[in-house]
Length: 514
Image 1 (tube, helix red, strand yellow):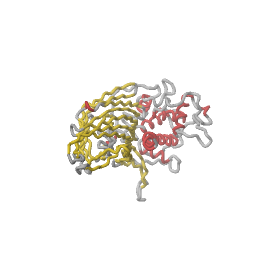
Image 2: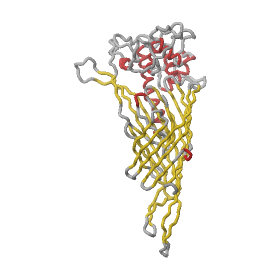
Image 3: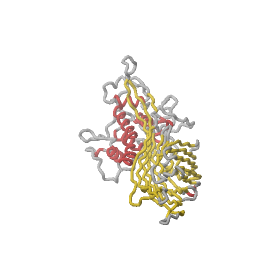
Image 4: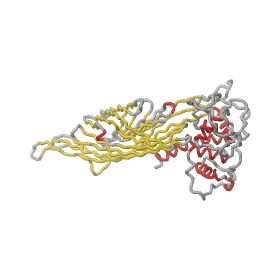
């Protein structure tokens, strides 16, 4: 997934163009704007009052030029903006570091009889950098930026400068993506106006005066896209299947803003004219929110039924994963209480997290698109030959560091998967293996002593994250093999973590619980 970054708009936010799967709509900018398929909205504070502008945004095919066309009919407002980006990217040890500056920038805002204009990048210095950490199942990123944009007012009546600092955090994976931006800006307006003054003797003369004010704005902007599954019952009774799963993908843009701006009072001069005066004793403080959602895209998944899972506690988890092609066996018997093998789990985690980039010719999982790379099959383990149906999956997860062999030469594909192994695999897929505290801690399970040293960090982290819980007596049973039904439940818990818990940490906790 490519990301293009930009700094723009009077409300001074920046551009992080994300192009996720399924053509989802993502707000193009750090302007405090929100967007769906048809509408883009942002708030303009340049007059000292919050004004919502609505319109469209266009991005060229290279993603390095963005054009805005917005308006506000209540104040006769028009906004046009064109941005050209200059971006450099460095790949380094599994991370991408991007630096973005402006190559060209023009902006004009008309509000009533006034025109505010930025003509080029010389009056808009801007710098932004983002680091993306690529993990097996998730890309995590964080960035910072700073800029100072200066508008002229009616060419020679004054200037408005907006100083901005900001940061963003986000993630992207197959089941969803979230980005949250925290933006702070300081506005400084100085405008010279000529007004007529009448003295006590009735004489009228033109007087030049400078009206100055300062304001601050805080913006919290978040974009989220989530892929969800719901079971839909069929109404007819005379039908070959009772129901099936519906996959729904939808994006939501939320922008919260709060401001401290000057208050303006209207006063009448001696000659009967009305003019606006800054009220130094009072401030205009307030907050509001903009929110837009995309139209959900929906897709019915294949209906799968195994004869030996009816009445089994794992029926829902098993059939849900089968409908997603994580379990590619489509009929007959599943064997829910049989041990899950290491090869089977390697395949399942690769498909559940969309880590597979190529697959054997005899397996066509229509759910995912993959590029076929012509290469000579290489031996990765002595007990996994290139003709093995699990070869490509084992090769991929081993290359990504998700699953290791039982030693340097052997994978043990038909070996029974233990709970400790499954937990370690999930933590590695998320890229969290280095987050455990220094050695000396306890996992909290009664059988902590039985946890293999290589799984201790992962089991500790999985317990802290809510991915793993002990049984009713407080045992985690790390060396017990995991049944196929238990593995299905564990994989679904992993998917729900990607769908919900990450979003809560990256959006709700930041936006709603600061």
